[in-house]
Amino acid sequence: MKADLATKYDLRVPRYTSYPTAPHFTEAVDGTVYRRWLSELSPGLDLSLYFHIPYCDTLCWFCGCYTKIVRRYEPVARYLDILLDEIDLVADTLGKRSRARHLHWGGGSPTLIKSADWQRLSERIHARFDVGPDAEIAVEMDPRDTTREYVEALALAGVNRASIGVQDFHPEVQEAINRIQPFDVTERVVEWLRHQGIAGINMDLMYGLPHQTTERVVKMVDLAARLKPDRVALFGYAHVPWMKTHQKLIKDETLPDFSERWRQSEAAADRLVELGYLRIGFDHFARPDDDLAVAHAEGRLHRNFQGYTTDTAPVLLGFGASAIGSLPQGYVQNTQPLRTYREAVTFADFATERGVRLSDDDRLRRDIIERLMCDMTVDLDALCQAHGMARDTLSDAMRRLEPLTEDGIAQVDDGRVTLTAEGRPFVRLVAAAFDAYVNKGEKRHSKAV
Ligand code: SF4
Image 1 (tube, protein in one colour):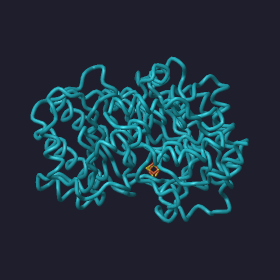
Image 2 (cartoon, helix red, strand yellow):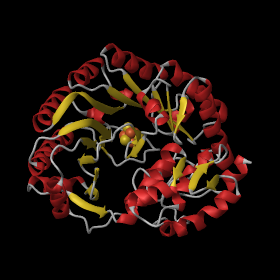
Image 3 (cartoon, protein in one colour):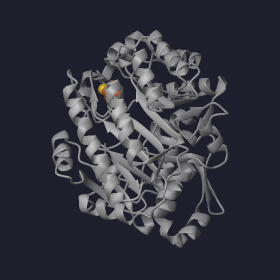
């Protein structure tokens, strides 16, 4: 039945790392608004910090991130100078030195940053924010660029979690996505990380890539598990060549069709569970003693721009071109072109280009969608009561849920919506029923499965 549903619901819906989602941000939220929102924050609120490094040295053809390919280090070094200025600008506006509990370096490829630059970035962040010894400092890593010395520099900068991009280990798949990364390259980096005491290891795997088969995907999971990551993220390749033109380099005929893509996602997930991982949300897996699994079991799991997280900080500050921040008042996003980002910050201005101010309705729906995405169930009555909103507010969503309940994807009982065991992979569709902005027919998002 599930494969039939997968074919029937071959729709494109958001991944809900925010609500409203980024395509609905507008220019009504600019640098002036961001400055005011920052200055309105109560002193003492916990912060999360996200730093975006939009550079890579080669282009992976499947890439969906915002990045620029560089052959020289000079543009990266200049960008880091601007990033330091932005850190000062935000810290000055906040006034009081606030506690940062989570730091995340993403990209692009933060692995391009040279050791000496890690040191100056780390010093500035510690000077402007209160980064305690219990803070999680996570870095997205490309093993192809990583050296032993580099891992030492990360350890010195206090990094304690590494998120390793793998995708697949099969040579034919790697060639088709222009990312040659033999198994032993990844294995060596994992050894260096553990040797340096960087104990938190996440691994990103993918299905739906060119030349992948169900058999190859299971083999990919087995190889990844050999390296004993604490967490595995299993993403479906989002083929959106109308948005990411370089993806045209991937030939359509090499991609698995919808049913095969479905089988791959199921086979990889089943294998991870057989190997002792717990399924977290719709695309993450964690060892039972990992913090993410514990938070999931205790109903404390959250979702942010990095996916599932234990992070409970009410404020996420985004630094760098295209970075998104989340504040109690709403979301803000920096401008994407590097030149406009650089010009804004050079003139001591915020590079905020767009965002969204949250309405009461947005806050209610955001909480509903987050609980669905994290727990696969949500108590609508309790959340409406907590937000002081009438249940009628959700009548549009209840109508959109009807076909999904008829197809056995979700059940509605006593004001509680729960994904069925079969419906779980379709959680994004159920979440989309509560999305007042979504237009399901548009080719704007990746496939629901
Ligand atoms: S390393 Fe990551 S960000 Fe850079 S091109 Fe490859 S997938 Fe994209």
